[in-house]
Image (cartoon, rainbow, N blue to C red; front, side):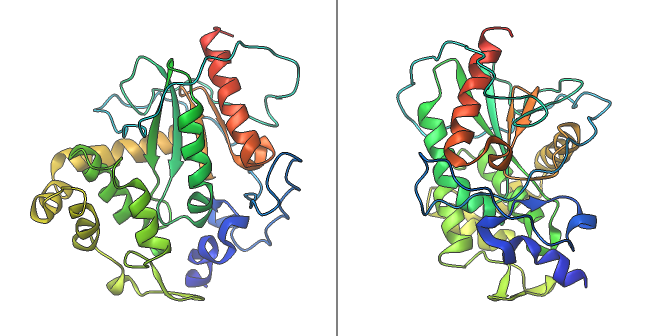
Amino acid sequence: MLKRLSFLCTALLALAACSNNNDNASQAPQPAPAPAASAPATQPTPASTAATPAAASTAAPAAASTTAAAPAAPAAPATPFVDDGKWVEGKNYFLIEPAQGKVSNTDKIEVAEVFSYGCPACNAFHPTMNKLVKELPASATVAYLPASFMPQENWPMLQRAFLTAEALGVADKANDAMYEAVWTTKELSAMQTESSLKPASALPTLDDAAKVYAKFGADPKEFVAVANSFTINTKVKRSDDLLKAYGIEETPTIVIDGKYRFTARSAGGYDQAVELAKWLVSKEAAGK
C-alpha cells in the first residue's frame, strides 16, 4: 500500500500535481480542466489545487538565501496593475496569512516556484516556468524552493542536491539537465520500471547527482562534502519550514513575495499561470 501511494506522483504524470497529503493520495484524481483557447492543444494541465490550506501561524525563520539565479533574459516591461475581476482571491490564487518571509534575500518582488526534479508535474511545467522567467519585469526576480515531501521518490536527495548546487553556483546552469537526468536519461530516476519504484537501497544518491553537476563545473568530491555540511543542513530545514509556512500542499506551486500562492490548475492552465503571476507582481508593485 505504501509503495502504491508513494508512486502516485509518477503514475499520474503531468495530469496531476504532486500532493503533500497522503490522505488524499488514494482518491481518484479529478479531471484536468479544458485548456484555454490560447493554449496549445497538446499542452498538459495539472490536476486540481486543494482547498486553501490553513496558513502557518509563525513567520518563516531568517536564514541564508536559497534562491537560484534566473536564466539570463532581458527584462520585460512592467505591466500596469488593473483589477478587472478576472482573478479571484480564494479561487485563482490564495492569500498566505500571515505573510511569510521570502525564499531569497532579494529586495525585488519574488516569484518562487515550489518544485522537485522528481515531480512529473514539475517536469511538465518546467518549460512554462522558463517562459515566466523571461516575461518578468526588472522589478521581479525568480527563486526556487525545493520540496522533500515524497521520500519514496527520492525528493529529499534531490532537494539537498539542488541546495548544494546553489551554494556552489551551478544550480541555474544545471537546471534543465537535472530534469533530463530524472525524466529523459533516467540516471537520477526513482523508477525501476514504468510502473514500480526502486527500493530505497537502489535510489540514486548524492554521488550520482554530483556526476550531473560535474558537467557544469562542480567538483564531485567537494559537492558531496558540501551536501553533508551544516550549512546545507540549515538550508534543508529552512526549505521545509517555508513549505509549511506557505501552506504548500502540492507541486508545482508559485508563491509571490511570501504573500500569495497558486497553481496552474487554480489559474486555469499553463498560459494562465504565467498571466496570473505577472498580474500578482503588478499588484504587489502597486501596493494593492
